[in-house]
Length: 79
Image (cartoon, rainbow, N blue to C red):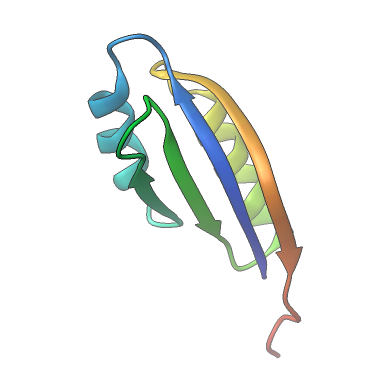
Protein backbone atom coordinates (compact mmCIF):
# COMPACT_ATOMS: atom_id res chain seq x y z
CA UNK A 1 0.00 0.00 0.00
CA UNK A 2 1.80 3.17 -1.17
CA UNK A 3 1.64 6.08 1.27
CA UNK A 4 3.28 9.33 0.19
CA UNK A 5 3.56 12.90 1.39
CA UNK A 6 4.03 15.93 -0.83
CA UNK A 7 4.34 19.70 -0.75
CA UNK A 8 1.78 21.03 -3.22
CA UNK A 9 2.35 24.50 -4.63
CA UNK A 10 -0.71 26.12 -6.22
CA UNK A 11 -0.66 28.61 -9.06
CA UNK A 12 -0.98 32.23 -7.87
CA UNK A 13 -4.44 32.84 -6.42
CA UNK A 14 -5.48 29.20 -6.81
CA UNK A 15 -4.85 27.84 -3.30
CA UNK A 16 -8.53 27.43 -2.37
CA UNK A 17 -9.31 25.89 -5.76
CA UNK A 18 -6.49 23.38 -5.26
CA UNK A 19 -7.69 22.56 -1.74
CA UNK A 20 -11.18 21.79 -3.09
CA UNK A 21 -9.82 19.69 -5.96
CA UNK A 22 -7.50 17.62 -3.78
CA UNK A 23 -10.10 17.21 -1.03
CA UNK A 24 -12.46 15.71 -3.60
CA UNK A 25 -10.09 12.83 -4.32
CA UNK A 26 -10.70 9.87 -1.98
CA UNK A 27 -7.03 8.89 -1.64
CA UNK A 28 -5.93 12.40 -0.60
CA UNK A 29 -5.75 14.26 2.69
CA UNK A 30 -4.90 17.97 2.49
CA UNK A 31 -3.48 20.25 5.18
CA UNK A 32 -3.06 23.93 4.24
CA UNK A 33 0.03 25.69 5.58
CA UNK A 34 -0.85 28.50 7.99
CA UNK A 35 1.76 31.00 6.85
CA UNK A 36 2.59 30.06 3.23
CA UNK A 37 0.80 29.58 -0.06
CA UNK A 38 1.47 25.86 0.25
CA UNK A 39 -0.40 22.64 0.95
CA UNK A 40 0.70 19.42 2.57
CA UNK A 41 -0.73 16.43 0.73
CA UNK A 42 -0.84 12.87 2.04
CA UNK A 43 -1.90 10.11 -0.34
CA UNK A 44 -2.75 6.49 0.41
CA UNK A 45 -3.58 3.98 -2.29
CA UNK A 46 -4.27 0.25 -2.25
CA UNK A 47 -1.88 -0.74 -5.05
CA UNK A 48 0.78 0.56 -7.41
CA UNK A 49 -1.84 0.61 -10.19
CA UNK A 50 -4.13 2.82 -8.10
CA UNK A 51 -1.09 5.01 -7.32
CA UNK A 52 -0.45 5.52 -11.05
CA UNK A 53 -4.10 6.47 -11.65
CA UNK A 54 -3.91 8.96 -8.76
CA UNK A 55 -0.71 10.44 -10.17
CA UNK A 56 -2.46 11.07 -13.50
CA UNK A 57 -5.36 12.79 -11.70
CA UNK A 58 -2.95 15.03 -9.78
CA UNK A 59 -0.99 15.97 -12.90
CA UNK A 60 -4.25 17.01 -14.61
CA UNK A 61 -5.16 19.62 -11.94
CA UNK A 62 -4.87 23.07 -13.50
CA UNK A 63 -4.55 24.80 -10.13
CA UNK A 64 -1.44 22.74 -9.24
CA UNK A 65 1.86 24.41 -10.11
CA UNK A 66 4.35 22.01 -8.51
CA UNK A 67 4.14 18.79 -6.54
CA UNK A 68 7.26 17.79 -4.59
CA UNK A 69 7.34 14.42 -2.86
CA UNK A 70 8.74 14.61 0.67
CA UNK A 71 8.57 10.92 1.57
CA UNK A 72 6.99 7.71 0.46
CA UNK A 73 6.85 4.09 1.44
CA UNK A 74 4.95 0.92 0.71
CA UNK A 75 3.32 -1.22 3.35
CA UNK A 76 2.78 -4.92 2.67
CA UNK A 77 -0.50 -5.66 0.92
CA UNK A 78 -3.05 -7.76 2.76
CA UNK A 79 -4.17 -10.93 0.96
